[in-house]
Length: 561
Image (cartoon, helix red, strand yellow):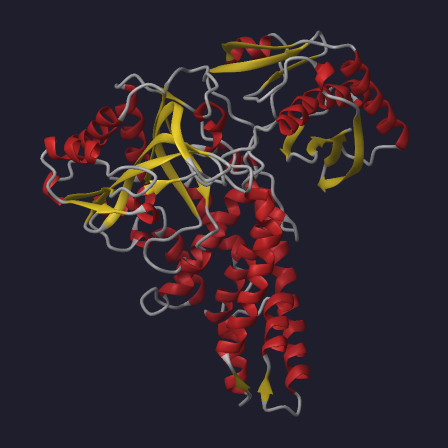
């Protein structure tokens, strides 16, 4: 079975169970400031998991592209990936454990034809917060599954994504010791004090990794031998003149990081030293470093060509192909020059010395992108003593500092729906329309990011705004706030929404039925929320910064006082 067949069978199966298909969302979450990337299929559904009504109903299915960078250091083995596709089905306060488990069992055994004797499952063993999940155990038992193990929170509990929010036990399915599907039972809410209470709306959230499932279905113990990876590996073999066997780690890292980079760039991110751009830069540079091990030069765009061939069903990849290849080429060239400077720095740091200390080795790692292996290699070649243990202690120290600095981003929970963020979110609608009124109707939203402190709004425009334009935009938003305009939500088919003049985010995909928010007779937008009821609740709007985001895209940062 190939990738397209697996996705099609999954979607069709759940449609036959009255689920509605939702579109694949951007890798950059629109409504969730607590994460840099979409890490699971549930991310675009955050408002609905928290109780908002979904325009398509309570039963949903879809495939979602995801990026996870938490275990980037594990990429290189047979099963870990930075970019992957996740199949999922959801119940928003509709069916519960029995149906969820029975659907999973039916799809695995009847549709994918996996023998039930090969199936093993795990359930939550219970603790002080929640009892042992005997309900899930009984359901699996009634289906003839005897291999059931009970595990603790670290293995069989999901969430919350931050410090608070929906969470609950889960049940995982394994074939040949490989986890391929996870059914999460969101039955609890974790509060600020660390306590758990029963959720007002109980949800089912499931995830099946496409790559792992393909490996299992094709009896492969290495994901990189499946059809979504092998052509990329073949290309790396051809370019390097080396075989996959014996060079697995380097080739897997290159294949994984180039693929993830292609998808991230196609979703509007370019390499930089901030947020998503920093992760992208790290991925490209890591691929280049491992390419060096294989004697590869100017190769990332050639490897990327194969990614476009494999995923030819993604329209945005086709549209952004030229731009994506340019960015890869540019970043690889830039990094190759940095590595050269790094080698010069290495020579300076070790001149007339017998040892490279941890501060100097960390400088090479952090500022010049030298991987640990490369530092070790250069030291060995030049007969310089180097302590890996001391370097790792220094690295750990910096990682802890970095985690502390970014922890604030993840404190809000699954998504921040606090009063402050809700107000700022509503303000972006007023800002969007004010920009169109002052700068011209061709202005389109390219993305937004909202924290409790400020809003950030990206839009298409090809030059810096004048101070006079900024003042006019600010004044128009404040005028609409003072007019006490009502904010009204309606549900309608997507076609009707666009026909009625509702604005949508440039390049975004929407389901066939959407929520439209109208603010007086001023603004009309397709959106998932959250919003306030009246503009009089907003306070004073102030633009604090206007800058370039990328070519042809400007960025405004603003606050409510």
